[in-house]
Amino acid sequence: QSLGGDRPPFLVARAVALKALGRGAEAAAALAGAARVDPDLTDPRLFPDSGRGAVHAMERALADYPNQLRLRVTVAQLYLAARLWREAEAAAQVVLRERAGEPDALIVLGRARLGWGDREGALEALDRAVAAAPDLAAVRGARAEAYLALGRGADAEAELTLAVEADGRDALSMSRLATRLWERGELQKAEELWGYVLRRDPNAAAAHAGMAQAHERAKRPAEAEAAYRAAVASEPSNPRYYEALALFLERHGRARDAAPFKARARTVAAAARAIEARRARAGAYLAALARAAGRARAGDAAGVQAALTGVRGPQAPLAFVRAHLAARAGQSPLGPATAALGGLPGPRTFAAGSATVLQQTAALGRGERVRVTLFLPGVNPELLR
Image 1 (tube, rainbow, N blue to C red):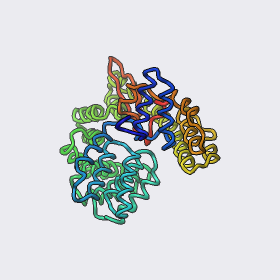
Image 2: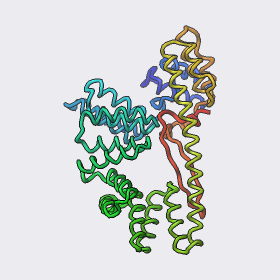
Image 3: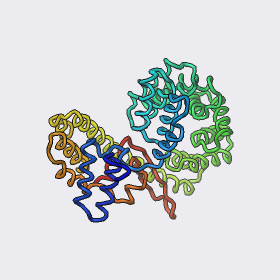
Image 4: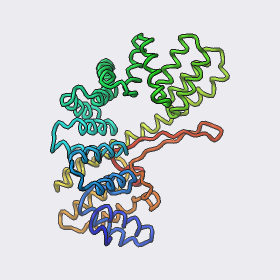
């Protein structure tokens, strides 16, 4: 604490440590101190993260870098690469307040919003990026991703075409465009694009799956099977590739060989559905808590109550909000902080650096497992029960 003073991240860390030592009263006092400053216990900045630490270290090392705007853009891009959606969006907004049309910052903003599920907000940011830099391949590719997320396939294809024309090295846009072309019947062009993608990225699962279709259509069954298996190996958490391989084997009279892959497809699909349900619950909880925290910062106790009406989830973050409101009202935050303390994770979980990670594991048999991972915009509520 001598280094951190009253900064919330240090106070939360202190509370976790004191709780583990059995010093509950001191732990609650530390947590109350954090709640005085800000009401959101699901803010990832209160929890350790190796990616965030690396970005902070780079910022400090380059504090005297002459082009500070470029440095801030890089910081936003690094947060995005670390899948720290909230920090990436905040860092991008810092840049945009200084230079409203900075395309790299708008790309970060759009991709961060896509990362935590705000598709319409992502498209709004990427529309601005296209207006600022219409000839930039990365801008077109990012907007295509937003269109795909919104189910606007024709608009996505137009953007992908422009992205590939602007930069023939954009393997991701090229693979997505090839898929669209194949679906529209332009088979030879799609096969050429998939082949080019795989020369650049041998682990591109979608391109392997596309080439498998092309090989099968050309009656090259050995090459097709190898490509289907390569798609499975490249992206084992995607049930579509298991199912495609199983259907291929069935079409070739190999139902016995297909059976294990059909079973794996069902298992992985069930894991994907389960983690999506957990993501939806976590997202709804985090959104409600964010609204409540915003009202708490304004001192609006009634607004907090309205925001939290009907909210289901861990009680610790809700108690943390109440501790903040108590402090703002000149009352002791210790009671609600003590309630919040009960939901803090243990030291090992706290220090793991994965507070925003949501994972679902599926057993495929014979000791083989696959893990589906999502990254939330705030601390996984399941850690705070």
